[in-house]
Image (cartoon, rainbow over all chains, first blue to last red; front, side, top):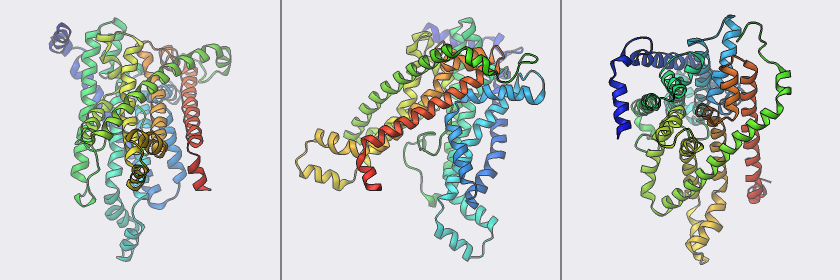
Length: 247
Length: 220
């Protein structure tokens, strides 16, 4: 297991803990880019999904968004975001910005799709009962529709979060740093140790994200609604037809 | 992007049609291998689950975790063992198809109504006959739905395989488009990927309709 020994040595090498290619710096770039992109994606997608799901208006938009989201590969989002950011800001689009734009675009479709689908499938009789109790539109949305649809909404957010964390390494291609920088450096230098060490960190981050959101889902969803079927980790990210993300 | 470079140059596309065709060919070859191998393995696993239902939970858990591993990581994790090769790419791609395909095949088989299975038993079908003549035809729409998702997903993932030297449409997007700051190549690559996904998706849908004429008859 000489190779794994080398990988361990790479993690503990002081040279990898200082300077502008240090592990803490790359990790910080990775996490800040992921969190910022997911937050911006939520801020855009959640209101859209809630509006479409509650009013039933613009359902076609939601379907179109999810179809585009399914067809464009994650690398495509970053690739397209790069000329867009250059065009918008009239200078070489390098670094945080093109990666951010691409990741936000990647985060939006699953959240819109699932929020819309979750609200749409709330029982019409429940809605009538809530209206009969005198709830206004906003109360109906916040006290009935969102809690009932929460499993599906959170599943969409989880798909987005995992896709964003998983795609963040590709930001290195457009100069955004992140742990992906090690992978590109390693591939360019034929340094398998560096590639492997970075890939393990990238994989761990994504799996942790998946598990964290699975836990959140179990905590937040009302127990009265029943747990989703399946594996001990809860529903795996992709496989329902509606919760689609590209990566 | 270099100064004055337009966002899209149609003349470049027209001059490079042969290159584009070659990249599409590479892309589809890697995709088809992954989906076919993935389907064979998934089918075997699903039949095992049909026999021993208790192994389904663990299979879902393992494949779910595998699925959460980012493609860029899974593509390079096996380089120390299998090098920069097609095998390395296919290991990652096949792993991703398993989650989707096993789930859909099992769901399809489990969706066969119990009375239908009873009827088949009553007619004296053996276990194998029941599987091939009754359960699989009924499960077919859900299985094909899984194949469609798996294929479209794989077409997207293969773009990233260019990082480990697999060429394909990712080569246009990354190695020419992003690295050489030439947005025309990036846009062309992405558009072809989207078109390919759509065409393959629609073709599989058509195949499914052809294979399940009874569904059409019922709808009419």
